[in-house]
Image (cartoon, rainbow, N blue to C red; front, side, top):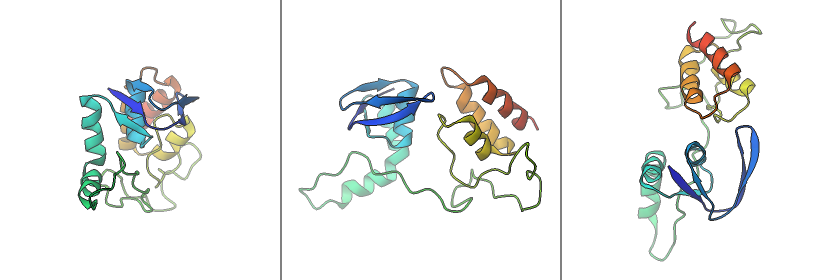
Length: 164
């Protein structure tokens, strides 16, 4: 998968800051992450166009049909705002457990009600989002193991939660 940078920006890739310049071509996992995160990049091959359509299909169709003629629409709409409550129309987000229940201990906090952090987020942020939820642990574990260099400490902790 390939994307082309539309405007200059800085992103953290594998916990390292990286500067991207207009016209720069990015491929592989980094291209996927940038496209999924809504970064200022444009698809450069069929796979990237397919993913962009999946991510922005409905919004992009609305923008293309809402113009009055001479207007130019941006290539991609901005990402939607984060959900303010758990399970806000997203069936993959489980409801929050009642307070005072499991997950109040220091070992495994309750799962966060915020949207999933980026896969490049620090381990503590990912684990805070996962909490004790085995399905979230499996989701993050699958994505982490698909990376070129999965973080072994994160993988071990996620496996423990997923197997619980």
